[in-house]
Image 1 (cartoon, rainbow, N blue to C red):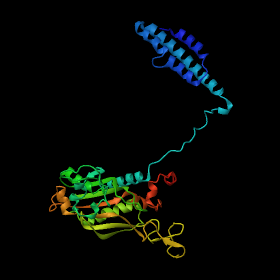
Image 2: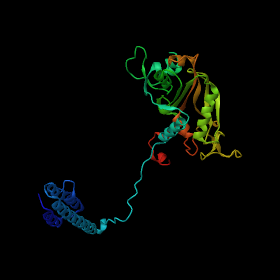
Image 3: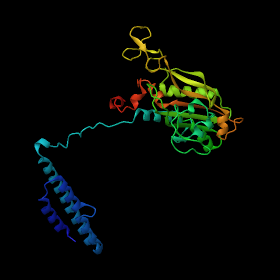
Image 4: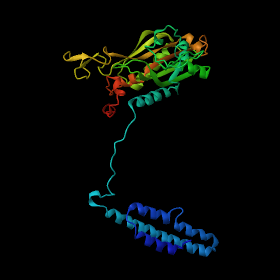
Length: 361
């Protein structure tokens, strides 16, 4: 075991051969590290009397200070010796590197989740690969329903289940309604399910893979006024006070009565027309206007909604005579595109991989 004085002498000799910052760091660790030479010299303290331990401790601390000072001086000297063409001024701020950001869809999902969390909805997640029974039969959709055609649904080439039928890439998040009812067994239920969904569509407002968020509320005496109030709340929180929504009577197999929810288009400000440059058009001007590529009529469909069909409640194990509920399914990309300031008129731009699009946000 090396004595402290010998350690200092050896350090000074070793320091003379140091020519780089890397080797200086190694030398520093060798002498001052946790298992370094100086700490090793302290191991003999347990065999000394109290006065001798005190003397040894003071000696080691003094030598440690000298080594630290010598390393600091050597480091400054090595930095000053760097070639002028590669000089490093350690007082200057470091280089600012561009950092990435979350995808627009991710931002939308986080905001949607937070909005519904504030009114007591629990975020759930269910399979992207689903059985026909959960996607169709349990949702009151018979075997001959058009949505079950392979022009509307991606079927997976795998043997069918005896009870649940074929496997599909889930065409909507509505299958999560059934799974949530079966999971809880008994209301009250307040669920928001956000997931990827798949349909063989491809145009300005559709892509084969997109995201949906499904809302489900089931309890005693739930009615349409609760549904309308929830949609209005979401629209005001997400889009702002100046956007208008409307409910249009429609037909869905899994809700009765059913509605489609529309919102005024952000690109054309609800007029249905934009200037040739693609910006919203002053309603007082008629020249140089073209139809809005995204909405074509001033309104954009957000998704479907309605009161949960009694057959769907029964499939989920809930008595429709005792409980009622509502549900909706909106496209995440669609609602995000209608958010003020986003200004996207083609959903495909989100997934084309063009960094210029994402850099704007």
